[in-house]
Every structure is written in structure tokens, then in C-alpha cells.
Length: 110
Length: 110
DNA sequence: TTATCATATGAACAATCGTTCATATGAGGT
DNA sequence: ACCTCATATGAACGATTGTTCATATGATAA
Image 1 (cartoon, rainbow over the protein chains, first blue to last red):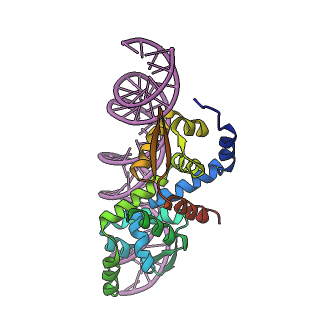
Image 2: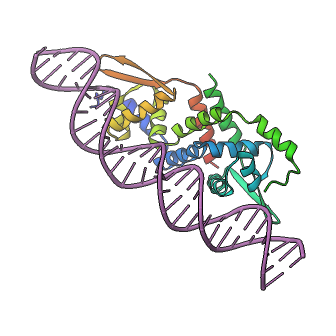
């Protein structure tokens, strides 16, 4: 299999690679961006904080579907929420969100 | 459902949102990053171009599994390949790859 | 040609995922 | 108390996904 001509360099590559745990965390983060519903939610939150039913209206989806996805986004610490009476407002929790999406947009617009 | 107090602003948010097709493409791109095997492959390709079996050795995975994932990465135009005799070398096709992963790393290291 | 090495690929499998539906919780208002 | 609105959540469903296994292709050497 391996020719072992570059064995030294290979070991070096291996050494510089982050722990499996870190890489798993990284891929989990990206898979949160890997759904168009969640991308749409993040996109409307770029503009301002918004309630669950408002997001559902805007995206023409059920409140349940949005609520499930908000849970995923919050679990990934991409959004936070605050309660005001009966309604819960969600908002972006992190500045990285925008730059990650921007990088992705740059890639596909080529 | 909708209070329609902010109806005007909502329409504006909607107008500024990219087409469904674009958002689908964007989420598909991110879902390619959403697997730790593919992240690992990209990581070793940061160092230099590499053959299929070499990557498989490095990651302790079967040649078949790696080959399948390389296909996904190539389909997303994140990597390219060149043939040299029997072996095929894969390499990064895009500078955005590194910056996207870097942004992700920044987010999880908080 | 035949043998071997490197890679690609199709089918099958379990596992994960996103939505829907029904229902539960939580917070005012009457 | 009751009713209603806003949100959350668990179960179930079909759909997608990553790996394995077996096999096919492609390239070189004898």
C-alpha cells in the first residue's frame, strides 16, 4: 500500500492534524450549515432578531419545523433567544456565522 | 400568526434573500464540510497533493471509503486530481477551502 | 497475453436527518 | 378557573448518507 518514501513527511502531517474530537466538532458545526432551512433562518436573522412564528411565516414553513431547526442552531451556539411575554425572539449569537456564510457564498459564485 | 406590524420590513428581508436555488447550493457546499472523514482528507491535502491509498493509510480507512469521499469532494469542486501512471494524486482546487475551515475552527475554539 | 497494483463504482446495509402530526408546556387575558 | 396564543417536543415517516463488500476499470510490467 504505502510506498514509505515520504514516511517522515506523512508522520509530520499526522502530527499536525487536530484531535479526532476537534475534527468531529468541526464537521458537526459545518453540518449545521448544511441544510437550506437553517441557512434561510440564519439569513433572516442577519437583518434582525425575530420570533418563531415570524420566521415560519417568512419561510412559508410550519412553526414546528422551524422550532426544531432553531433548537439545532441554538445547540450549535449559532443563535440565542430571549423571551418577551408569550413570544420568543431568536438572534445571532456569533459574528463568525456571517463570515462563514460569506466564505461559502464566495466559493459558489465562481 | 403574523402581526403585520413590520410587514414592510419583512418584505424587505424577503427581497434581499438569495434565490432558493442559491441557498440550496450553499447548504450543499457546507454539508460537504459536514463529515469528519472529508475534513480529514482536506486537512492532509493542506500539506501537499496525495494519492488515494496514501490518504487511506494516513487516515486508517479503506481505499474504497476514501475514493467515495474524494468523489464527493471533487463534485463540490473543492479538490482536483492528476494521474501519474497508475496512481492518481488529489490536491486542493480552491483557496476558499482553507479559509472556510479556518472560520469554523475559530468558532469552535471559544 | 497474464499478473499485479491503484483506483473507481454499484449494491446493500445501518444510521442519521428533516418534516409532519399530535400534543404538551408556558404566558397572558378574561 | 378557563381560553387562547406562542412555542416546544416526542413519535413516526420517508429520504439521505457513509461505510463495507465485491467487482470493474485503467495502467504498467513481465
